Structure formats: C-alpha cells, structure tokens
Amino acid sequence: MPHHVRAFQPADTDQVVALWDACGLTRPWNDARADIARKLTVQPELFLVAVDGDRVIGTTMAGYDGHRGWLYYVGTDPDRRGEGVAAALIARAEELLIALGCPKVNLMVREGNEGVLDFYATNGYEPFQVHNAAKRLIADS
Image 1: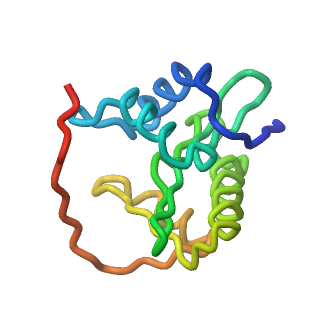
Image 2 (image 1 turned 90 degrees about the vertical axis):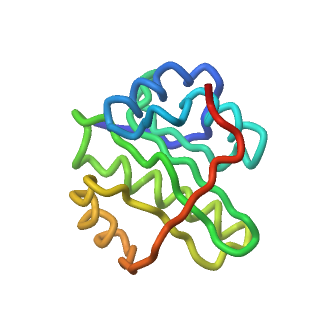
Image 3 (image 1 turned 120 degrees about the vertical axis):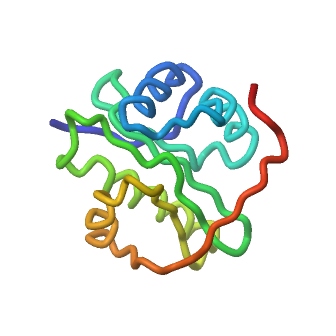
C-alpha cells in the first residue's frame, strides 16, 4: 500500500500516541504527549510521520545538536511492517539532517527490542558498544 512521509501536524497527536503504544515505544516515566509538545518547540520539521491517506502508520523524531544527529520514536504500525515505511522515514530524516550539516546520526535500541537490529544494519547503521547514562531534569507527571 502507498504511503507518504511528511512533517508531523498537531492533528496527528492522538494517532501518533496510539501508534507508539502499539509499537511498545512508550514508557511510564515519559509522557508521550509532553514529548510531542517539547519536540514542537525545537526543530519541529524533524518530527516526521508516514501516512496512508489520513492514517498515521509510522513515525520518527530526529534532532541535531550541532555535533550529532539522533533518531527517536522510530516505529511502524505492526500491521504495516515490511512495507518500507520505517526505511522511508529514516531516509527522509537523514536527508533533512544532511541539509543541516549533520555528519553522523545515532540511535539507541532499548534492551528487549534487539529484533530491530537487523533492520537498522540493512539501512547502514553499525552497532557499537556504549554505556548510556541519563538524568531526568524535568519529571513528567
């Protein structure tokens, strides 16, 4: 089935949150709606959705800090996997990052989601070992 990649629009919010839930991308300590609202204040053009008609079937949220680009919330409707939706989203995010002068893009795969590693390898992403550490500065309610 055909799909189109475009920038997120606020009217997409409910469908995006439902998609993230269906993909297992949400976490109790992150308010998905707050994450969306925050992204809309910084590089909103890098928040992409794949749509089939009026239906959101995939997302990625990209960012560039002047040193590295990052991809977050890469997800495809479980019923639409294998159709190239995520690959199209990533390719468009990479194009936008390159246009900003971004030399390298990173992403993180949560423990338990290793099944996506082959997909990322097929799309040119090389695994490397790092230790991630995080500190929450603003708690979501």
